[in-house]
Length: 440
Ligand code: FRU
Image 1 (cartoon, protein in one colour):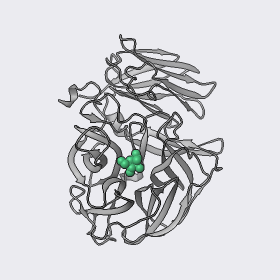
Image 2 (tube, protein in one colour):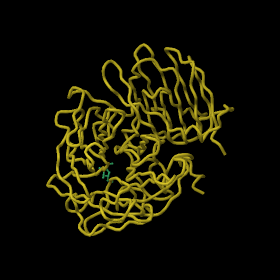
Image 3 (spheres, rainbow, N blue to C red):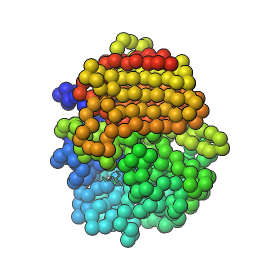
Image 4 (tube, rainbow, N blue to C red):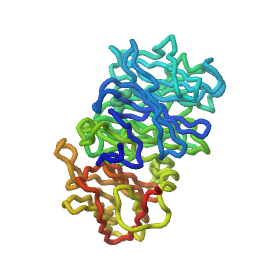
């Protein structure tokens, strides 16, 4: 039945009913991808936060598993992460799944819950909270195992910096260091960190709200080194790097324990400027597509590569087919220096994408994309640097979203759109577009 809703994505994760924001506590175990998320079960605006749970075996088809962690005397349940405790370092059992989240009450403090049934149900730790502070914005703990120093590391957001802690048992945490003062963008509060080893470098993900390149919330990151105690950024303090150049990419963090050394990240596909007002019914917000993260170097700076996960491509017919549909993958090749792709419907609603090879930019204009009067900040044209030539693009349309990716991973752009009828026409200039239908 939810499939009849006009703006309900067909191949992106959404809650059937209610409000969703940040992805939380994602992990992989025994062939299953687990996704928890900030959820309000009572309505489709932000309130009453708890963690709801969905699972998938292919990152594309999700099954709702119910609410996993609910509010208690310490507060509602804000964002955080999970680890699989393979060596029973915490004493909750071998292979226990341990969740770290923020208890949002009179103060923001950090708490633990553990699961001995593969993340289905959680018990709260009796000695919560495990980390406290006087800083008012103090949240979103993200935990990982640091192999070189053989200890657990927790990174969390504290105002406009990230704090780093270490632990042997996941319960007792020692403050190590902080990162952020003077570095990157400080137009808003820092939130939802992640710290990831990519090859021999480290990437610190720092979601920020507001301060994004086109207003509102966005995801910046820093590349550098981490020795188990301190993160050191390799760039000059004033350098700011954005993971995605759309308006609707936020709270992005990675799956813990992913197989084959993969780094899989998942965004919340909205913006705090208007997330509570978008014209969907019964539910609000979807996740962006799952993405694989790597690194590339351009003119002496390291940047992340972002590519749709292989599971995304596998969900589509490999043989191109006819017309543009509400759920489509557009494969763009033979791209010339001034290429454009316009998606439109017979209501005069359209989205214009332009690659300007001389300027080295790719842009997406949603000023006339459909409904936009629900909030003044929705109309926008977003522009990304391409760091060299773009040879091919993959563009994913799903009823109310458009995600554009450079095939080499050098740019991603995630934007919502609310056309009153699906775009069914595509005009391509200076490039070739193949249309792939979603597998039935
Ligand atoms: C980010 C955020 C987090 C917080 C959560 C509350 O979108 O503000 O910092 O934990 O949302 O829902």
